[in-house]
Length: 403
Figure 1 (cartoon, rainbow, N blue to C red):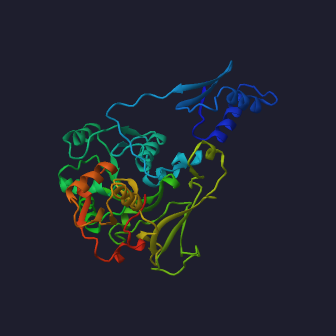
Figure 2 (cartoon, helix red, strand yellow):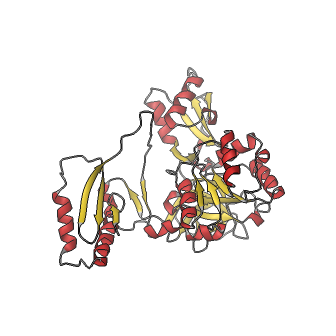
Figure 3 (cartoon, rainbow, N blue to C red):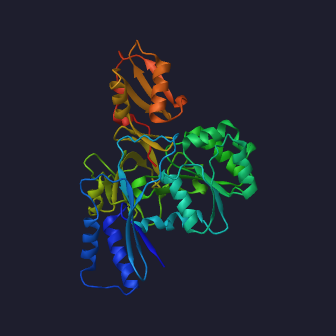
């Protein structure tokens, strides 16, 4: 038996796990933890900037500590990070018990990947099925590729999930034409889906006896937090449902005082053991204690009806979500500022709307922003008018929900 621990993830927790592993082999010498930390410190050059994987392996005969070079990226690989914050999640949160129970995921089920595993929702789908012993079909095709649907037929896939833009594409290609008898349910998260699109899929799913689950969550809560039962899909359309069992959601005002009145807008305050410990911006931050105290102030604004169903109505800040990615509208405006262009932007109906100076080349700037953000240019609209009032760009009008 070999126990492998990657220290760059959770240093403090992994050291403890290492000591536990040593006890399994009856290695329980005095000051062993101190000696191991000294050994690591001695072998690291403080003046050197490392870009390696730190590995510790334990067996009955030895403790192996090593640094391994990272694999070189492919020439065509590209990555953009905008105000990136590393989210720490407690290990036990990765067991996905609640979502497995709710969706009744079992060993017989098969799902297919439709999102990058670097995206929390996509990773959640993969991990929840692997934990349940299900089959995960790895896929790199899009829904407009015939091979995507051929793979679903070949392996008799039972379910898949997607963000709003994913379902918009399914609608454009006439989803009903491709649906198979093996598909039993679909999941949607990563942002608000328009009511017309929800109605479109609801009608098709009901006709073909397929369940459609609307969900809500954030990466900081690893990551699914609420769900809407299929039985309530039509009567509670546009709702993100209720919290998963064991979790709590309260709406709070700007002073973080709990709002008990129905149909009153407030920020979603989420509580549960799945809430991350906090943000890590550097290596030293990994040793911090639980900063969130199992409570997450999401920044999303919502209302609650008389039956306690939640409805997202906006955002506190200027963070938006498109194609499952988070973007800060301030970063976009600063991007244009760095080019000497004064720009204002907002987010509406799943599109970034730019307001540019009268002498701007809108097509050129749309392409520029599309490349910068790595998103489809069709989701960017540019207007040449900076003389108008910008009252409609207020924070409260950001129509966005974070997964």
